[in-house]
Image (cartoon, rainbow, N blue to C red; front, side, top):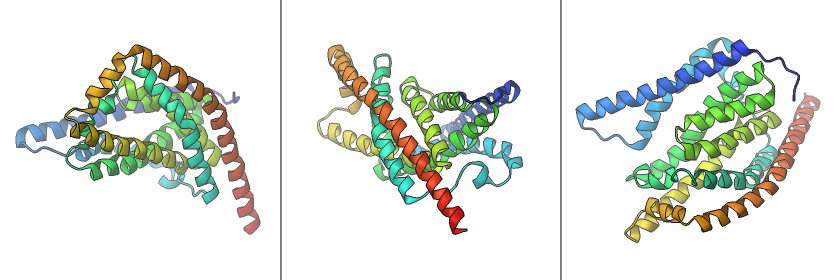
Length: 285
């Protein structure tokens, strides 16, 4: 662990900002709900999502105004194409951990994406995929890694900052199912960003994870709709089969052990590549 001093005052101030962010987001959603109730307008999912996200982003941007350039302080630094390829590889090798945490949570709660898939996709699968695979990753990474992770890393050891920011990322989803795997993803994202020196690393990973999930969701909705049922109903039947769930958990657990080692290896390669890129820039200058 790094020997960085733990600034308790700043640490708890950052946690207070997170609570304020949640309050702002929930307030935005409530306002939209009131407007919908009085006008009878049915807002698409993307509008509901932005009603939550925009006030949350406004809070962190306001708190960051004294930190200088937005792009620099939030970590928007260019990365090389080799780092991009390594980031894609990192997403692939770390994904079994995500699947394991997702399945583990389903021993206690339903699969939230499956149970709400029909309403999430709605009448426009394209807009749903755009929201999940592009808007959400950029905005959420700006919020969670650009602000909270970077702020926490300044006031406590990095391992603590990554665990706490990952926890906040999980809590931001406000359900236990997504909390479990988002927490782990948040930690991986934090280490990937430190290795590359850029928030673009976690944005790429987030885009890939969400794009896969969104496309899968659209396919599942169409598939089970044609069968006269829903993905949520099928997912609940699968959850009821405890022996099958346990077998899947054991398999994913074994894959996750290998995944942890591969994840650490690829993150190390990203750090090495970033150092090479930095040295090449110095020589060119």
